[in-house]
Image (cartoon, rainbow, N blue to C red):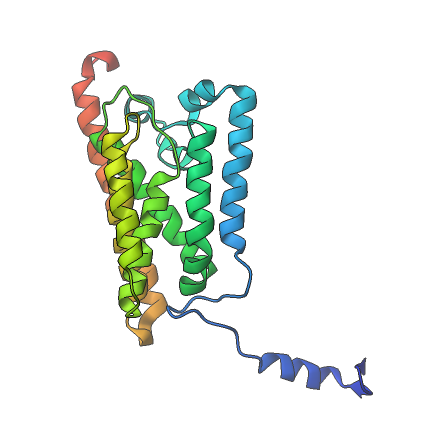
Length: 250
């Protein structure tokens, strides 16, 4: 028997009662609770990594782990497409991205659920990295969560449209930040656009998947999107290897 607030309960009764408790689900099928655990974890990871960057030297860390097309294509360092998503070039860069993540993350985490939100963030960030890889000067080094952040903005638009909510403010926010990306020097607008497009597509896969096969369609759609991005990265690698063939001894 298990002691309760009033009297005792048999273990079988307690187990049966727990099994009948409904798990809270987001509008798009994800499991949720009141905590924004994924958002806070992502912020924590980026802050800790920037601290390590600062200790080792920001420029040195970016050269070793940032998105550097020559390193990706000629040295086989494809992991840079992922590591660059969690690094930042300055404290201001970090603070801006983390502030927007803090504002948007909890809303999207409640809409999509923890796991789907994390997948959305990572896929959008990867999309931003691939776009930067494709369209940046091969000699440049870039980094930042901006691709993922723009993906979250697009996701909020898609989710709002699916739920018939007012998305005007989000569209204005996207427009302002896109303009800043072209006007202010040193900003990788390619990653912004890539993250925006891929984040929107990923959110559409999650939001508009048919309810009866929702999880299957969402999973298959995101996997297909990642494979498409990986294929684009492969094509860019092949093009750069041919461009710099003389450096490879070919």
